[in-house]
Amino acid sequence: MAEITAAMVKELRERTNAGMMDCKKALQECGGDMEKAVDYLRQKGLAVAAKRAGRATSEGAVQCYIHAGNKLGVMVEVNCETDFVAKTDQFVEFARNVAMHIAATNPLCINREDAPQDVIDKEREIYRKQAIDSGKPEHIVDKIVEGRIEKYLKEICLLEQPYVKDPDLSIQDLLNELVAKMGENISIRRFVRYQVGEK
Image 1: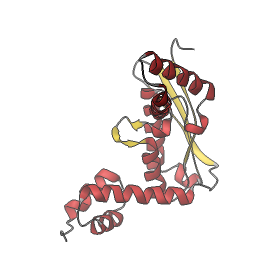
Image 2: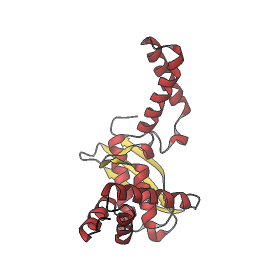
Image 3: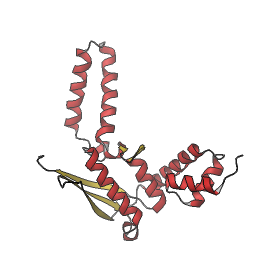
């Protein structure tokens, strides 16, 4: 088994923002393999997030991002369980980063459950027509359409989008990491994006 050095623990901490002891344990569990340790910590964050998911989030913060030139702005509400967590630097930074991400990517909704059905139905019709017009056999048209709908949902749902500052992470991954660190249920409740000249 590879020796776990302080430099390895430091590197993993910088990559994941997890606690020192968690990083050391992850490296030990993964035999010193940095990539496996990153995945291990992500999975741990996922497990903590799943455990906390049912808990009420009645505290939180509203953060804003105004893009250079003042033509584009976003307000986002992120909720948590306690006022204490809402005031931490990590929570505030997360909310700001989400607002900046929304400014850059213009998601339509937070998750799949919120995706407007009429928009999805319209996209489905377009994809079906494109597949048929391109001469695809009828028996594979449905598979093509569903594949494209899946891709479309990942583009319009905030939680599934690749994070603009680190495309290896989704916004959901970022949220799970924060939940694991804070030990509380945290949720992105709502957002609004304003762009000058847009209706």
